Image (cartoon, rainbow, N blue to C red; front, side, top):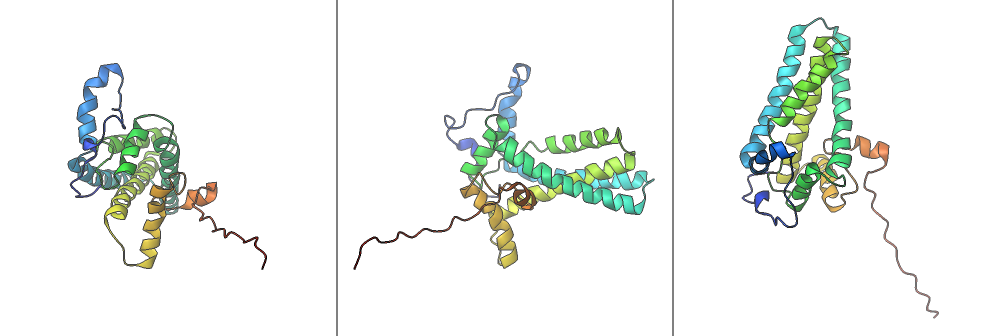
Length: 221
């Protein structure tokens, strides 16, 4: 996930079997696998994630017909919803029992400086579809704004994840923030949040350092 020369495609194939697609789409498996471990895909993803969030938010504002207070509340809801999406996807999808998402995430744990990421076009398509689904239940302007702020949260997550792994912060506050995720790489059953540890605190998965136990001598003087 950086300019590091290592790439996940060079890892032992026997330890990480290839991801399988439905039979009619198997011809896409190899191109997508190569794309998802490339520096181009990582950079394209960071750019496209930011652009789709700006596009959706701008479309929502342009569409108008929103009350300022409700618009602000909608934006906050979008960011809050994303914090749970980030946690849930990381805990139950990326660290699930099986599946291509788990396989790709295992690659990242094996090589945190690799370029593993979803194909850059998938998250923007998902965010657009999400906006369309929201529009079935709420006015279009609010639906686009809600999807846009969720997309902004995802863009912030992607950038944060890269920065955490490639940059060494000097600020104690930022070091503490980055350390929360770094702990997850040593204790993968804890600290599933990346941008925030909110849901780890709420759901009890925040890493707790175990107190050291000292052996008491039974010898008598």
